[in-house]
Length: 216
Ligand code: GAR
Image (cartoon, rainbow, N blue to C red; front, side):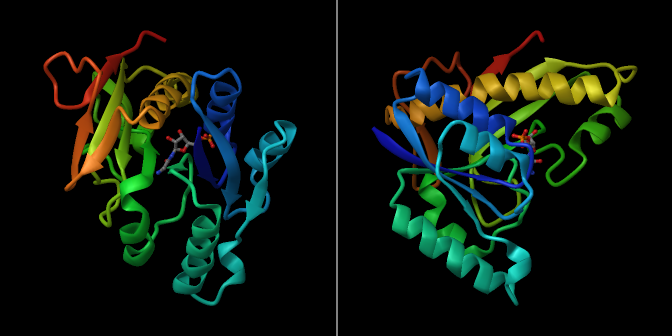
């Protein structure tokens, strides 16, 4: 069984989806620690409700980003995990920690990358009158939201849609696709080699990443 660490900063609904999938054996893995840089993150309460170990590493308590990341890196080392999932983790990480863990660190991002790295992705998709919006799951690289993409989930949108319902729909597909991808990583069916994502036993339907369209 693989050991997973999940990094969060806020609500933790994706964390909850991951933990539930582990508990129902959809993922052959265990969330051994939930790490939050925000001591008030609701995800910490969700973790405790599921009796998952939590750790707060509050970036505000460190004099520099380097010191914060040194402690975070040491804690991740100590956990000796197979996979690190950034699930709503809202800190940008520096080169040193990323280079150390990049082959086993994935990020969930709420846009169809390379569209809209960074913040306010839903607003941007609506403002640009996009017909499709969605989520990306990628291995983390030193460039923000630009690491090798593993999977994307796509929904249809129109600019009359309210942002609240759009966020809700995006969350729904995140809660389906992220556990699915983690499950495949835990089966060693997805991994990264020389900066290229490799897939085994997965039908990519002619694409070079896993793409799923959702109606939610
Ligand atoms: C998710 O929608 C995730 O895609 C986004 O934060 C939300 C966290 O929700 N991540 C980012 O914006 C990262 N740049 P959650 O805390 O309920 O899982």
